[in-house]
Amino acid sequence: MSGKPWGGRFSQKTEKIVEEFTSSIGTDKRLYSQDIEGSIAHCRMLLKASIITKKEASLMINGLTKIRKDIESGRFKYNDSLEDIHMHIEARLAEDIGKVALKLHTARSRNDQVALDVRMYLRDEVRCIIKGIAALRKVIVDLAGKHTGTIMPGYTHLQKAQPVLFAHHLMAYYEMFSRDAERMRDCFGRINVMPLGSAALAGTTYPVDRAFTAELLGFPMVSANSMDSVSSRDFIIEFIASASICMVHFSRISEELVIWSSNEFGFIELTDAFATGSSIMPQKKNPDIPEIVRGKSGRVFGDLISMLTIMKSLPLAYNRDMQEDKRAMFDAADTLKACIEIYIKMLPEIIIKKDAMLRASSGGFLNATDFADYLVTKGMTFRDAHSCAGKAVAFALGEKKELHELSIAEMKSFSPLFSEDVFNLLTPVSMINRRKSFGGTATKNVLSAIRKANKDIDKEMKSGKQGVKVQRHKGESRTSDIGHRISKRKKP
Ligand code: ARG
Image (cartoon, rainbow, N blue to C red; front, side, top):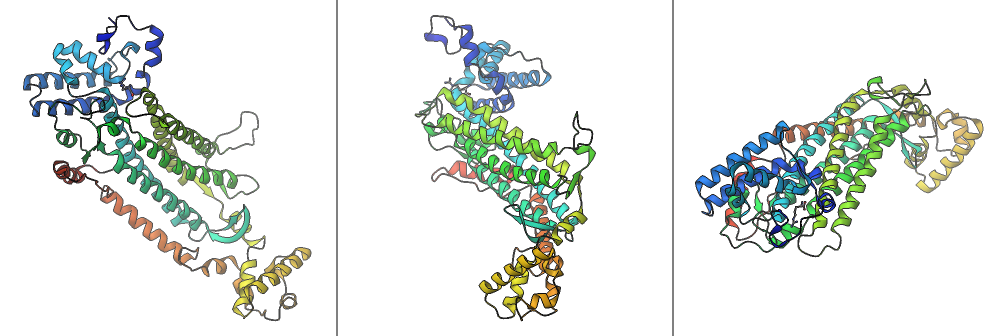
């Protein structure tokens, strides 16, 4: 006999190396809390469905509660021969309360149990990430609010293009992170579905009340197909995909902070508390935080590829390959949370060098478009105006001047349409404030974008957020009621 809970048909003892290789306890012990909470709910459901007695239920619930305490105080002993967190807890319960513990697994399989645990775990992580992103968006909006008068060059192809408000540039990231939060909220709805009661793959012969278990665990709905319940991990893939997109945004802002803090740009400096030095070059102050965040984006993309590849081509239903899902899920969530947290702390610590930004905005022909637009307002076609401005740029380059440094006589040599009023249009402030099209960088627009962002964040924070849509199955009336009740209780 193998001595395992599943060892009935086995006559040999499992090889030690097999135990070590198949064990996932090192990773899935993080699910202990969800596993215990899920088991207690399952126990209550078994009692309600008269599958176990009141005495048995209370023995198990007390035992599980004690195990939670032992794990949290560090007294719990782990052992590879018990494979995973589910078997550890069950075995320990049997040690503590005797044979009755073995009734806990009635109408349940580790396949639906682990699906429940990861959904519960991820649900909490996504709630936390949405809150974190809201705090980050607030930090960005606050910084933008301080820089509605700070002018910088806007770039395309990393070549200076047109002047913009630094606040406008920052608010672009506000938009990106807001969409990231939306994506998280959206995937939350698909995570928040209760799989227990699907058993190994086909459902169970016991008269389980899945809606009751869902209600106890705060799920607004139960899964509709037992095979899908135990074998799908698209909710994890979706989470890591959303996390990856958020990390793309982190990598972009990080790249900008690295570039801006270079000596060549000199747009920003990180305070000493948020930068690091070089062990050999005493003059160095390195932007390690944004660099590491930029690097960590690759790590989360790797988690996404792992998860996609683990799931690719798996036949229904549960396959042990899926045990490998947790590492990617934990890592993506941990990494994203760490990046959000450090950015919330670091962004307010950036020293913005307004003068350098303005200086960079005043040279490099950033007003060439406005120079051409001026001619258009005087009746020239844009194509002709573009070519005329191009010739003026070439001439000014030869003279080592900017366009606004040309004399009116020089300008007139390119077109008689020029007169003195052109100079007013060529300053960065005028260029910015004339870009009043909705979403453009005009100060008025940026101020109202900031006002709206502040209002939106306040509203989200007050409502505890965040309008998660509850999806229900037709004919699943009990769960619908639960959905209604639960949606008032705990939202992400
Ligand atoms: N440790 C397993 C996992 O994470 C639990 C489910 C195992 N199920 C089984 N039939 N061996 O996926």
